Length: 200
Image 1 (cartoon, rainbow, N blue to C red):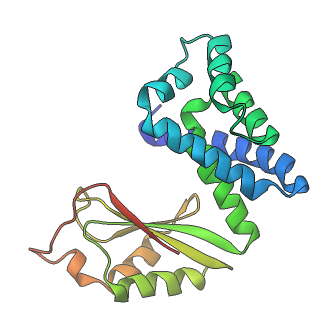
Image 2 (image 1 turned 180 degrees about the vertical axis):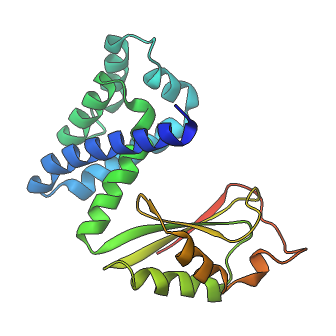
């Protein structure tokens, strides 16, 4: 299984968990609160890699993981968020907790008429290209796009545009690339890989 297939599969599993969590939290009016709680857990684990790796490790006994989760999070989380975290841990999915958080956020955004658009370029977007990306996507998908910009120096030029889980087809990319010739111009300033910012 190649890396792209693994990522797609993980994203699909994350969506399933997000839908289940949303199905329990939304009727109680707690979907946004649970999202923020799980996001805080994901951020905490990202800041403590050893703890995150232990909870995600397939060789660590389930009972030990659950004991650690109970000790750390019992008094920090609502009952819904705590139960969701325990289920994720019991099923060996703590490694995709950040993806579950993203999928849950996307689901809430869709309900509010918003959706994520990820644009990856070799150099940062200028204002004109950013505006054209937003306008072009608004003409394709109902709702308000939330633009996430990612700079990847490994890209030779142009744009990679992902709307939710769908990459825009080549014709749309070519149209948008025409608005920003500097992305492919020799000597254009290249951003460092991995720099990312979001524009709501």
